[in-house]
Length: 263
Image 1: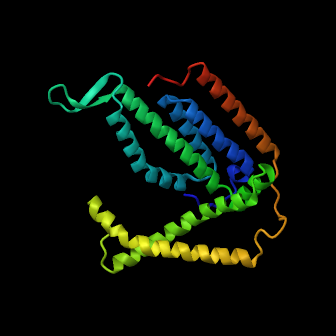
Image 2: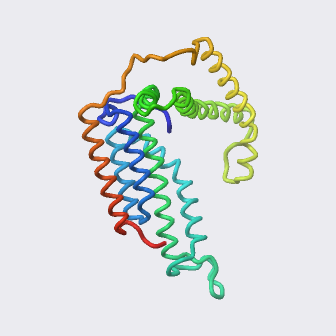
Image 3: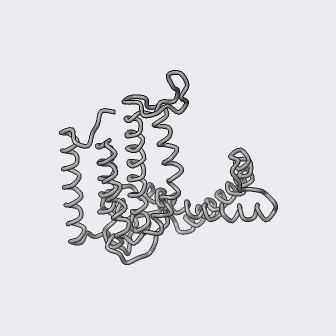
């Protein structure tokens, strides 16, 4: 989910600053609104930007991966949020137990749409922006210390690498007769225990090799220069104006009570 996908789309050509501003705007609008209809519109715009960046296949994988988490989050909200009119009782005995209310459903949908909007916007940023461009934008434009920016992008790079290593270890465990598939959650949890030790050891080895590589390149010994430069084109300025305009309009509507329900 965090790997860069090379491409020549309009979203790829935008500056990292523009996409960071867009992610921040999605986060702010997602927090400002709590009505599922408005948050669904926010999620729809995020999906449109992802498709504009030609990330349809990766977007489908991310949505399928977030599906289980979204379902769990939705069920938690409708089971433990009891304000509003009762729609049904999960256990229809006596006065009923496990009431599902209209406000609980609305609140659950709002939480799911908000979570998916924020996470998918970050996915679009990472999938359409090279890590070195993110580092340059953070260091040169936002004045973030290089050490912190480097640690951030290094952590992002480690995620797909560790996922690939985990798949290799799982395949090796299956060839040795270790059952890692099935529908029993306890059995699957027990089956994943042999995955933890080799994955931790691989992570430590990679971290050690990275530290040695940084030391041999005199990391942090002096001022840094870069061949690349983070520049803002006319398309970036136009997109920034649109994003800021939509953000201010959304915050104004939220302040006036639009897009918010008393849940």
